[in-house]
Length: 168
Image (tube, rainbow, N blue to C red; front, side, top):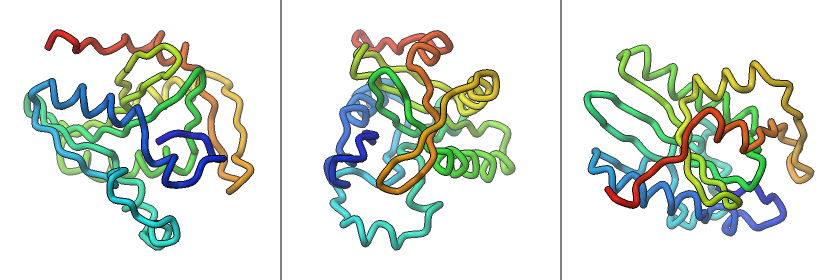
């Protein structure tokens, strides 16, 4: 989803990053299924907020690839990825809860930059390592006071090469 808090919930829940993720994942010929709340569901904000937090924060896709089960969470950014701390904690919960059952469970972030027009996949472990080894600035959204970490897109692109799929 977009991180522009000034837009309405409905505007934020429609995302170019989601479209890029769908385009990429469906071309991979892997088993791919939408998992989290889709932007097309048109859930009113007040109704959506009644849903338990862990359910609201389900990763966007599930993928099976070469015997591995993968949760994928889609994130869009410009030059800075703004990742809410409570969202990150929820994604960690999803990964750790299902990893207990099987060692072949992963959680990746599909990240699309509207500035570079490139997509990247980063495991949750790599993202946590990036956060732990850098002194990223933290800020909060004025509308809800939720704290987020400001991760420079350059750091993401340095750690994870851009995905190539035009010729799949």
